[in-house]
Length: 386
Image (cartoon, rainbow, N blue to C red; front, side, top):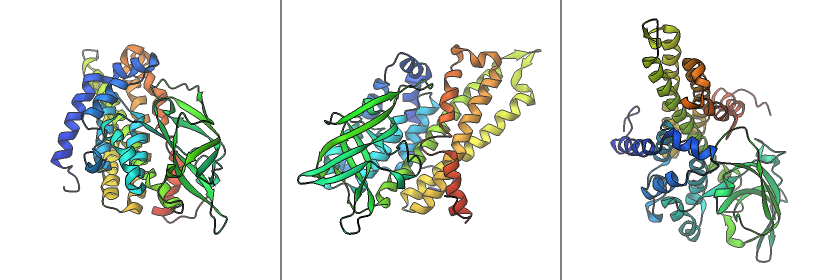
């Protein structure tokens, strides 16, 4: 593969996923959200066709590809109007973490369901008083005679109502130093002592957000994923894929909005010509096309670096991609609405409901400001601000 051309295999994957996305489309996605349903049919078909498991090792039923393949699936579905948030969480974060750090037994237990779409897992790191500062996590895991006991809470955790298990980031006391270290645990969503409370959001989405409570949740020894001494290395193994996937979803949403704006600008006539003939309409759309392409290239670069094992380079590129794609999504949906005029606010045209969601691309899974902090510190060598 050259630096600017995806492999033929990935291009074919994109075409196939685009066809699946077109079968469902934005109307299906929005209708499911408004009616309080999940996009179960799309998720199940994508899983059955192997698209959700493209980056899971073949040994466990997956496609044996890399994060770039999964990102391509996510992007093409979003471009079709079906941005599947749980793709970012379940196969990307949880799947990558277990594939890298799980025991053979854990991989055999958790990965095949991810590969065929029959299992969905959520990821739980954010806390009310920690936010982006993972050093302030207070959810605590203590050893017992036969396993672990978990206490604490999380907030803004996606898709808990759809997941059988959560990959929870907790802290445990190092027996030698007494210092707190992060550790990862798979927690059943039906565990005794675990409760969830839905957060009412202005965004209309099939995926819901939750505040979580862990009150003496008892776990077996093998609930621990990887080493209890791996520390931050293990935690960040899932965060680069998270940013790559978030950038892909944002890029796809931007492509979806741009396509709608361009189509409208071609067909809507005023004073005897399409409005797209006017530079006040065409130039903003052309600039957004450039922004989207830059975000796509950065995302592809970050995925290639990650696949090559250059984790530091991938982290830098993934944070830049996240900023570029997030801004492209928010700007493109805003401009698409402006291109439609009053119709941009009509439900019929399918843009207004995407407006609130587009803001999410600048906020989650890491805020634009925290990503810029990373770039300022690691790319530019500027002093830390925190």
